[in-house]
Length: 179
Image (cartoon, rainbow, N blue to C red):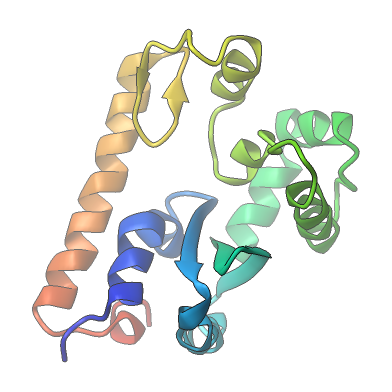
């Protein structure tokens, strides 16, 4: 069976989160793909992977892909919880944090604290907030500290994505890959 456009997008943008090596990933699809996205969400929820729609604007759906236990544990880390609390998030409640993130995404300013959900290191989020153009380099996010450590992490994400794509190309379904 040939992989469809949404399936390839899920792997390219969210494979590391689906595999559990990253707390969450963010992606966007067209409104015409909502039924396919819902089908994937139904299939993956049984495997511990959630696909949560965060916003719908101008025919585009922004969604978050995550393993619930990984994201909950990540957001509960002291530094993450303290950072999110500064923005008014109800720390200690994954559902509350997701609901508040949805509200923040409806605002006029982009909520850069979303980086915490995505597993971006706090020092890089703070670096961006202080100086958006002063990063050392860009990869999955803009890096402001420990570049070698971040390059290794980006490579880990890339290898994960490549592995999943190879399995898809060999005819395996995402349902089988993430059983």
